Amino acid sequence: MTAVRVAVAFLLAAAAGLASLPIRAQTLINIRTQDAPRYDPHHNTSSGMGHPMFMMGDTLVALDWDLKTVKPLLATSWTMSADGLTYTFKLRDDVTFCSGKKLTADDVIYSFTRLADPAAKYPFHWRLGEIDALTAPDPYTVIYKLKRPHAELLVDLTNFAATIINKENVEALGADFGVKGFDGTGPLCWEAWEPRKELVLKRHGAYKWGPTGVYKNPGPVKYERMIWRIVPEETTRMAAMLAGQADFCHWNPLQAIDAFRKAPHLAVYEPDAYFGMYYFGMKSTREYMRDRRVRAALSHVLDRDEINKALFFGQAQPARSLVHEKAQDFNPATLDGLTRFDPAASRKLLDEAGWELRSDGFRYKDGKKLELLLYSYTVGENPKLSEVLQGAARKIGIDIKVQMWDPTAFFQKIAQQDYDIWTLSVPYTSAGDQMYLYYHSNNRPAPNRTMWADPVTDKLLDAGRTAVSDADRRDNFYKVQQLVHDEALMLPTVHSRLYLVAKKSIKGARAHGNYAAALYKGLDLQP
Image (tube, rainbow, N blue to C red; front, side, top):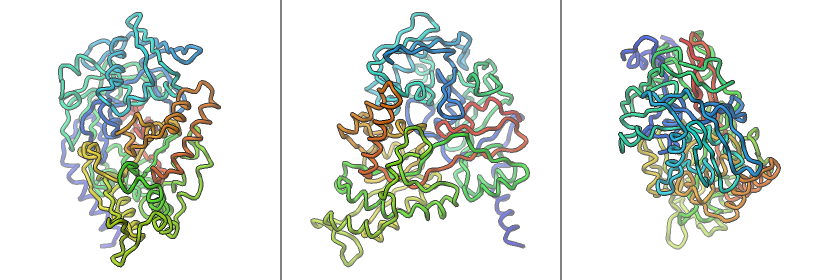
């Protein structure tokens, strides 16, 4: 038997487990690598939660395919005061939750008040800006008053964290909200969830308020159910798609993209716009990581061209900066030598920092070994990236210990703060989005896991987010990019690409880049 036949036989055998599972008529199967700890849009930043949340819930406004243009969704229109402090949203009067309860301004106010609660410390609370007051002069009008302007408020309100939730549902389920149920206004409704196995969503029959100008079909969807099935193994996901046992996958083994393109029954879609990055984060408050020279040494030891070639099969872009060159407010001056592969520079930096290389191959100072703890998790290329950094660091005398976690446990473990480095991937919409996400001191301990607390950084970020003019916003975000880039707080590895693989028989498939969701609302899908 030829090698090709052996490979095909192996893949088909790997798919047998999926084929044996019962599938109902008009049910679409979407396979992915990770689940979520719970399905509460405020609770965490996990894409495993966020992607299906776009289908289970709705936001006031939606993001078009270009990741810049904001479109009506639950809000039919909005106005902004001249000083940028007050937004008035007019709501649709025909929206219902899956339970049948009618949506009103009270639901919007409850959702945003809950997300903004300082005691809860929800990781994406900052996307709401600094709220002064939320009021409802009538059931279908929301007046959103800010303490300071928020230049990217409308785009931030398209994120899943701004999903409008049902207070009655939250209070009825208590600690089980997002675990035993979720009542949203999205095109799909919660049916069942078996953690680490599958999330089953069913059609919201009353849905007819899809985002204006984004989809041809305002709703309801033209299928009965969608199952978000967890398939951690790359070979099994590849097998499932090639054998026709799944309808969608955007958590694709990159080595399989060319094979998917050649498969007669599959189509590969990329979004009009998408920005995502794999990176290593440096916790700046740890004993050894406080020294910029140690952080910079780790940056120079990464061969990003080889990483793209070996780990991403050439399907990504080596990252020379923290922000993609096509993203809004990208600063081209950050494309400098800090991301240059230069182990000699790494050794020099460590020598200057007083770390002496000894006969055992490791570095020491004041009797202490240069040993770092890296938190990683078992999704995508993160395990392989962790091994690459571990091996490269070993060559310059740094001993990195790797602890690997399942996605459902990773965010709880990293919240305990016992790490020097972590690795993740991040989707974002603009330079300002990414910069504020990771570097503002208000976002400690998450998502600012670098624990960076710098008054100059905060001042620049605040000035950029409260700027009234595009020029002022860009100027401040340029400066903060340069600052954090030079500090080597985060080591970019590659700018990733987003691939949605789907059966050709499914009409209306198109990839959307919002938070790497790919399917987003999925309203035009037709089996």
